[in-house]
Amino acid sequence: MAKPFPLHRERSGTFANIATIFLEQSPKPVVVLDHDLIRRLDATLTALPGDLRGLVLASSAPRAFVAGADLKSIQEMDDDHLHRYLAYASSVYIKLSRVPYPTVAAINGAALGGGLELAMHCDGLVAAPAPKVDGVSKPYFVGLPEAGLAICPGWGGTTLLAARIDPATAIRATAAGKPMMLDDAVKAGLFDIVAADAEGLLPAAKKWLIEQALRGRAGNRTVRDGAPLKHSGRSAIAQRVIPAIDAARDEVGKTDAGKAVLMALDAGVTKGFAACLRVEQEQLVRLRNLPAAKEAIANFFAKKK
Image (cartoon, rainbow, N blue to C red; front, side, top):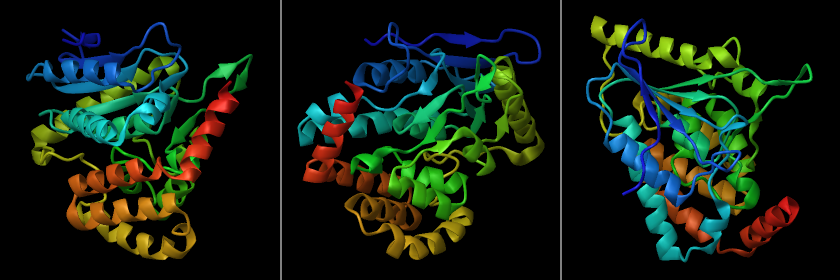
């Protein structure tokens, strides 16, 4: 049985009955999505109390929210194993979208690839401003870098990002595998709130949850239907996304990764979130076997060394 992550539940005061999950992966300096971490998240979400007013997903790592997926493990899996791994992680992520109370991700640093996808399964996103080192601001990256390695997102990123910011901007960034700097992500409207400082991140996230709970009591309760609150298949969002897909085909559909992004997003808009996941995961497994991806991933590891 996997060990759940620490869960802190406020017992009294303004934030009573709001709980915070702290992702941690000691002794690693950042949180990376691997099988063990996903199993721990699964155990944590399965055991959540049903009477909370809200849930914050946070990271214990000081430098990043989640730095992305464990690319080395993904690279080493055979196709069948990778399909099962991607599907299992999806089944865990979606639990965040099914709890009966509002959820928010408190992003304290870089949120990349699967880390941003995990965050976007929450109802809201709240960010900390860029940290300062020796008085100099050090903005962090937020986005989906997979296409930069000639692969594509695998946990809903194509349809989730396009639902939260301008769809044309999201499509171009996802198809290019180009994450945004924090300031650009803020300008794009990715976050519901940006805290005044790092210390204010969790209070800001909890305040946002309280506001959502009050809206629910006023008759504006979030309806859970098994999919994330914000994805491109929802009718009001799809009206903005569909024209952006059509306009982007000539621009971003020239690479295999770009084509995969458009295919997945199109499936998400026309057939729903689960359909987007199926296409993403099929394409991710296919693409990582092609020479372009093998070369790009090999170069990535070479640079890290």
